[in-house]
Image (cartoon, rainbow, N blue to C red; front, side):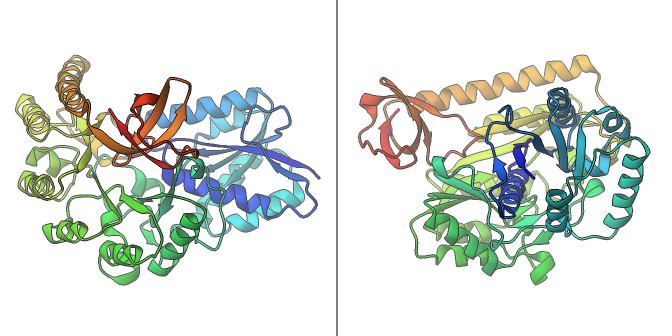
Length: 447
């Protein structure tokens, strides 16, 4: 029996970690060298495609279905996993010609992988697929979130670029009114501190220079295990690791982030001063409608402390524009907020109803013309901020990682910028002062 497969990960890097574990778990079952992984899903030898799906937004659902359809039309055998399952469209699945397996990411995943490789079951068809999903629904009730541990090896995709993601917890206890994650998945499940430390040690020994710490709500890490937020207890143990690396924190929700927490970050030598703070808005009325439990005063105190105490801080945030009840005053508050703090990077989301989200039932929503006008206005303000920051960076020296190069230029990620999220610098070779053969090593360069 041959099992030639490839994998596609859609959207978030939390999913990517699971994809890496699943690939290695399949390869570990390779007793007779008949299981082969191909990085290119279009390779003619590939028979099976594992598609790790995101179902968080309508745009992600469209991407998932487009991707599944594309490979179905190529007559690849489709294995669907992760967020598709709870909000699936059975009619869409029934139209697929080559759906091979739906693989829930739960406690039974290892057994399901072994069963798949052993039996190579026939394609699901018509009524069989419906009964299968009914079974999934029944077995998933009251289940806790599943998360991989360090002793299940993974195939690290980003080592050649010098970084790897480490997921410290899965899913979320928050109930933001615009978010459907609590509707489609489970409550937060954290990994033990010792387990996370072991995985980081392993990745750094494999030459990872940066560890990107991720979860759905990093600030609340450990509440389910230790009955209190334990992120900074974890960071203290990471700081003790006697190896050469640095770490970055993603998804630090602001509501329980205190100034005492930020003071502790100042003492961590391995911490990259990158602050990923998804504020979503600044107007107290809108924040309350979003079910975000902080206000403009708390946000301002956090940002003032960061700017006054972290000289090289890089601040990324998210904005949701035209949330229900956002009139001109509320939108102008958001504009003034962006202009005042001059964020280094902003992910801007256009609000739209998600049927499972509480916000879809809210009234006083904006029309398309108003939405388009506000988006353009905010984008213009952000572009001016970015242009000003880029002008100020010219002829200054930075530390970064080379991603690619040719005879004239190199593409470099400045160390304090996040991989995949923030823009790379294109730098003439003559402006790189320290040239290292390995492209993932640090270099000094002049922008």
